[in-house]
Length: 367
Ligand SMILES: Nc1ncnc2c1ncn2[C@@H]1O[C@H](COP(=O)(O)OP(=O)(O)OP(=O)(O)O)[C@@H](O)[C@H]1O
Image (cartoon, rainbow, N blue to C red; front, side, top):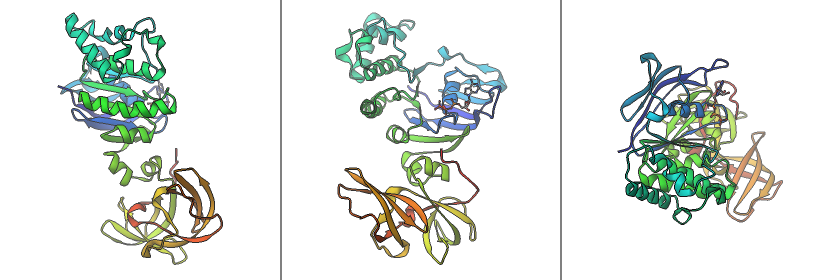
């Protein structure tokens, strides 16, 4: 039976600087993969290390499988080896002088398994990660991707209650990274393991996570399904970090349920989605994904004159720079044809459900 992880109001203050973790709470139900996503320095690794017991939190509680393993307030701190966790890190961390099988059997040595049982468990773990044929090879004779598979097999061989993964794909080349990313989700789902995964790569988070938690400056900004994070980002930072790189500004004129009318200046008005509490007359900033802007289409309400500034043909898609309301926006059009010429005056249409308006609360750094 795999575990649930419960993190409650976690804080970590190192001796210098602002808190690395600043009141983070979330839970990981049994069998779920939760990904912590955020830019460098946001506190995701420190959160993972606190769960592992490698870092001591300043306050807050961590529970694994219903048992509190860390609570400074109550004087509880269970050491890492008694937390029954599997861990996979960025570096392969395999024993170079051993074979694949010797590496994978290692965690079983101090647990009470018979030789036959241990052999069966190792065979099963190697089959899961696709390394059955390599069992007797020295690990030094493997590629980086295969070494990381060995590390994964070793961390899941005894079916820990919780698996912690810290950027396990970042040392691999681009092609291997994509393959192992897709395989990893299949492997984790086959084992039914509960996992906490840390990355700064949003594509990785979307593919791997049942839920994604976006972190910034030690805080958890939003934790939701990839679909919700992608289509209903909680704030401008989450929108931008997950690829909504365009921004327009305006003033909210009126609202009707989840939508509102925004004045972009000079009498130009358009409809937007209000994912944030905004009221009439509020200054708003509107986030837009490049792939959600359509060039050359009149669709009534949200169509505006625009100009094509530049274009970059990329084979399966074409990226355009367009000028709208005196600003440069990035647009991506899928398909193998580059349809719009540089310099032409055209129309763009902005579907109202993809124009996410947030109350303007000052500058947001787009890390
Ligand atoms: N041992 C330490 N002493 C002091 N400050 C630290 C220590 N470890 C981390 N920090 C600080 O805590 C903050 C969060 O760091 P953390 O490593 O958790 O971020 P991260 O999101 O995992 O970044 P990265 O992806 O670069 O590893 C950073 O500002 C970092 O400088």
